[in-house]
Length: 430
Ligand code: UD1
Image (tube, rainbow, N blue to C red; front, side):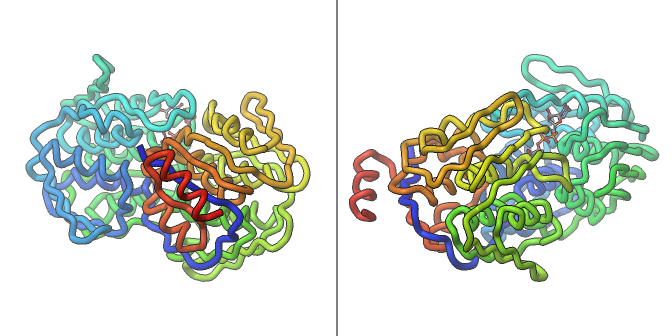
């Protein structure tokens, strides 16, 4: 099993190229199954979750060809299996996007109940409510979500909670329904907009993505397309906070600064300099970090997927900070690991009360999930001494070449397989 060996203390300095957004790529790949024609998709991140989605699509009959590391050609004309239940797809959250896509196209789909990060209960009732409103019969049996419809007919759907997944899933199915669908209280995340743009590039008629109300005029058929996925807001934000915590000077390149506004605002508040240009942002951290308060919210609020990264920065900032998690119920599990490194954080319900300490000290820790794993790595980069981060498979689900990108910015980080390798790293870097 591989681990990261990290010696902290080096400020991160330089440029880092941000990849395509995982959470846009996953539904876009599913949506590519909605046409018989060939689709070319560029800026696909080479991360485990996306690769699981690609291989699952191949399993059910889609033809996938890599044109380069980040560009694929996909043709779904010969999809012959509408029951999606392999062991790998079970583990990823985005498996549910195949439901909306296949239901839209074939009026039938059975997909294994989704997994994903263990950050609290993650209901799918709004997805099912949306499919039912469009006329589908949906049941959960033997671990599968089963959906079928004689006809899908547009409907007026009010989402009871703002859900990225439900908004995208219902939008996909409604694209190929008869008549008009209105989704109210829709999620506004950049990846919702990206999926809508992709569907529109295939001939869909979707308006209002990025606002609370999405209007979809059903079409009978979609056609081929060439599309480039947006940059990953969370990967960019993670490197921005890595710069902040290591007293570094990092430019994240190939980003859309507008998507990063809530992250930029918090970095300014805690004392970093942030300079935006058209498609890059430079973060300079030369002063001691200051405390702040933050609450995670749907876009354009501060993203829940950046909550662990800001928490690890605030844990070494001056004063007392408060972080409130309002999206997921159990997203502070990593705090125990951070405590091993010397953090002073008390969690009460969905709030973390953080008493900033002057430094972290290296320890042996485990990544509990994807974003918390990345946050622990950036804490280790700022720590005194060495840290071994276990369970990095979670981090690899969503970050491409994470340790290589960090190393190119001057971090001392290596992949190791054994305790002996780790000890060698400690000696070599000491
Ligand atoms: C997606 C992202 C995840 C991110 C989250 C919020 C993917 C693969 N994952 O997850 O990284 O943290 O958006 O930005 O894109 N809810 C319900 N009923 C539903 C659906 C959701 O009650 O039917 C609740 C959830 O329990 C949660 C909240 O709504 O409390 C938001 O969830 P949602 O936006 O759906 O998150 P995901 O799409 O699962």
